[in-house]
Image (cartoon, rainbow, N blue to C red; front, side, top):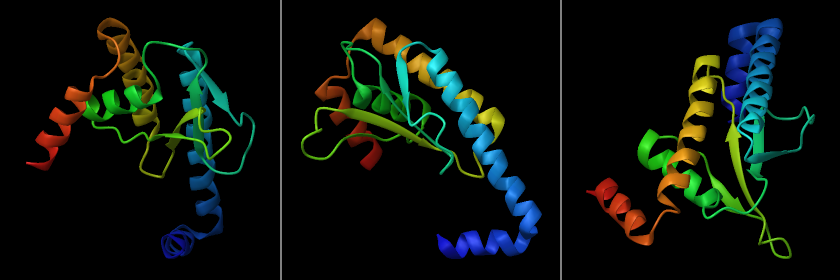
Length: 143
């Protein structure tokens, strides 16, 4: 990863690399605003300008959880948006994370936001993902 960053720094120069990083940060901020506007999530670490990523979780209890959303996004839209639990003493806290890389353009940020909203709508209609659905998708991916 460090070599890739160094390559981009040499390739774009200092000003170009700075602009690339600014664009990634702007896209992350836009995605955070869009996800928050869905009305189901709370953004974690708002205003922290360290990495171009968006960490978020469901703002309240639903029949589905962050893992169901991640599964729905992967199975129906092809997004790899990880869901995970926190370490011991906070393992009941679930999070999702979207890392905004150079290849995640503004139009893809908008698409991701729309796909998250669609995943929520699907889960609200059909309920949480069942274990048989998870197995069926795992089986179809491995064959």
